Image 1 (cartoon, rainbow, N blue to C red):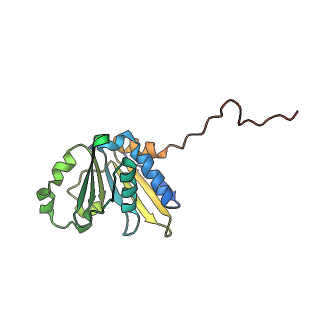
Image 2: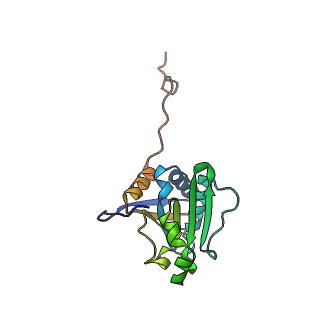
Length: 183
């Protein structure tokens, strides 16, 4: 997690037409090397798709089995030994007691290396460090989402750049895809 002063946020807007676009974004994010120590805030109303995005991201990172929402537990930890990566998925929707922050060891978690994902971060305002990347989701239709990405740190900029790359264009092999002249 990076703490920087004076960095101007960089904002990008996307439209995800369906859940496949959410999954594709999650796969691109999972492949970003900068993700290892990022703190990402997920913002949006109930039903905006925050937990769906996290599930796709955790799947893309290789989390097996059922991915639970931490709504009641506040945090779900994941240890990905094959990637040498710890991930913590927070859901602060029911967070109301500041003593819980210290008692649950959240300060230590945010001071350690690993990926931190936080839904409903505004409920823990004043306790959380500055997020590297903010992902704000808004339901446009039942299937589509308007997405605003805000990079607040250099690490956040690297994540934004990683998910903003256009897919590679396939190379033409040996002229076989070239139009042929008629004899």
